[in-house]
Length: 298
Image 1: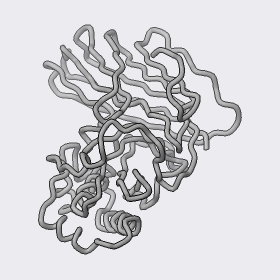
Image 2 (image 1 turned 180 degrees about the vertical axis):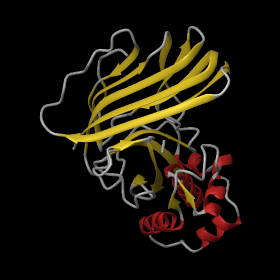
Image 3 (image 1 turned 90 degrees about the vertical axis):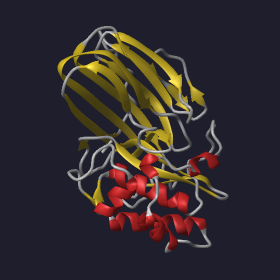
Image 4 (image 1 turned 60 degrees about the vertical axis):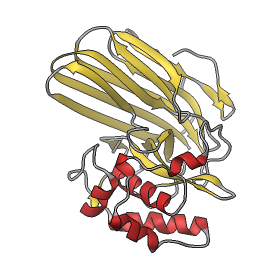
């Protein structure tokens, strides 16, 4: 499937905000299941945009604003060719060993209720256990965008029994680690055929299973990530894999708006576009072998 992703994030500040520094984890890596035909990150502000690879192997950029701003807009647009691998990530250079992803964080610290859930899910077959866990999280947490926030931890979301994809994913990561399975949080996009317009990026999980390696599970939809998923970044929790995360001085109250449009298309891949007057980084890859030439969370 060929997917077009259009992702726009806008921060508006009550007063001019100075010293803005943002970490952008917005650029996907090629894998066995996704080939990046083109990808562009545009920051609509004067400043410096520096690419780097973070500790988890994510492709990222640091943005430093040159002056105080009342609005910061970040636009991502790309084209990805996806293949259904039943969630199996396949060969991918990993900077960290799987055992690192057994480590809990503040957002994935287990409580008694999550430990009790884990005790009911142990199975001899790791893959069966993982699917059982995904279904359990899907059934116990109702999708509700109005009860949690970005700082909500897994234990709180599980107690509420409601949340968004971030919450379901962090609950699954937490319980998987209790079962002895290395687990990590994944941020990305899901081009849902019935609602291509969304107010946030998507999130799911990956578990490291014997003989299979890293395997994806989407507890929000209770499916294996497939042709509609574009994998962007991974981490121990949602903070590690946040699409945009930064700091500023002043600015007063902040208003955030996010819009993601993901759709499947047919025909010949379109040519990379040009952004006039924007600070931009563009990546073009021919396939899962690595990057080609080129410059520049529901």
